[in-house]
Amino acid sequence: MKETEVRIMRKTPCILCLFFLCVFIFSMNGFLSAEVSINGTVETDVWVQLEEGEKLKNENTFSLKFEYGSDSYHLFAQPEIQLYGVPLIDDIEDLQNSDTLFDSSIRLAEAYLDIYEFLFPVFDVRIGKQKIVWGAADMLNPTGNVSPSDFSDPKEFGEKIGVNALLLKAYLPGVWCDLVLVPVFTPSLLPKSGFLSSLFPEIPPIPGTSLGTQTENVSFPENRWSETALFGAKVSSFILGFDVSASFYRGRYSIPVISRIDLEREAPLTPVTNISTFSGFPKLYVAGLDFMGSLWSRGIWGEFALFFPEDLAITTNTDIDGDGTFDIIDMTKIDPYVRFTLGTDYTCKNGVYCNLQWAHGFDYEIGKSNLNDYLVFRLEKGFFYDKLKILPLTLIVATGDIENLRDDYGVGYAPELQFSPADNLELDIGWFFTSGEGENLLAKNRNKDYFFFTTTVHF
Image (cartoon, rainbow, N blue to C red; front, side, top):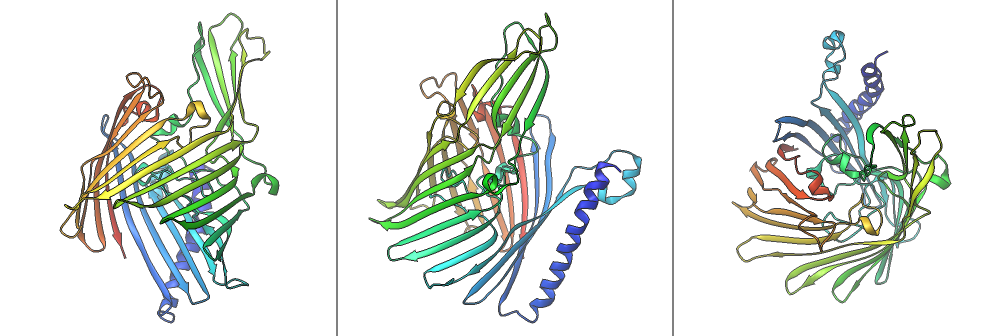
């Protein structure tokens, strides 16, 4: 049986279940219209690489949101279907079945139950698949580690993936607390193309050798409670006009981290070197602090997160003689390090909105010596009661060596135009250009400029 047939057979029961779920929901809506809310979106998203005119992405997404509740509980579910514009054609027989022309996926983005005043009036509990977003910054949240990041769409940067969790909220005098338990670890979703290759450090060349085969090995945590369970706690309060939170997270890195690199000659006296990398999801502790408020009519916020990797070291082994014997040539231990984000925003009298953030470190940057600095600035102006929005300046500047900007800098520029000809219709057109030098994320993607066009209908 071909791979495409297996994938379709696996999806068919899920698609049928979603279909009957939608039929049931709409049929019940007539009887429970006072308590049931149903809405959703249909979105078409096209990305094109400008340099080669290569269509990188052409997706159609159907998202349905279902809510039902009362004074004592609230039920929410959001199933999604995505159709990808990449045909799955292996031979002539695939052209006889429309299911093989386009790849598709189905997922339950969120599905949870809220129970209010659970056992005691001060407790609320949420059970099920949910997105848990911690932190005060705008999308760049070093303290937000409970739900993994969704990197599949760079335009939707900052999105999180729902995780199966038990979230307990306690409302005490002057303080409110969150306790969360995630029984099963979920990694981040990486993009199918684009900056995926930039998420991992490059292997330095070995003098007198040339590159042979490259293999990447990723190990996943064992399916045992002690290996997959994640815990988190957050305490929040209102102090001197600011929302302040302190948090703790015990879990894992959600992006694969290289722990071992093997360099092996194909044979003695040959210059060809094969490279094997071994990655995993190391255990991690994070202590965080964030604040948000206003000062002099300007919004300000900040996040600080101290990362404690558990026994994480990167080992480089080499078989330079080609005899099958490996020697350790380098071992780098990852010590605790700090990531932070500071930001401010302001709306001018003429309606121009300004947003400025400085972030030290990104999700895939592990260890103090690998943290880059990112300066993000955005201007936004609305016209005709915000039916037309112009974002003429969304600028991202990155560097890994602030004292040597000439040789290590990255610049990203993303102008954008948003138009709403009707209350339930949105059109979004934009570009993303990059340039730079060095090893920072933007510089590595200087030849990957994109044009995107998105149409969204809400119902």
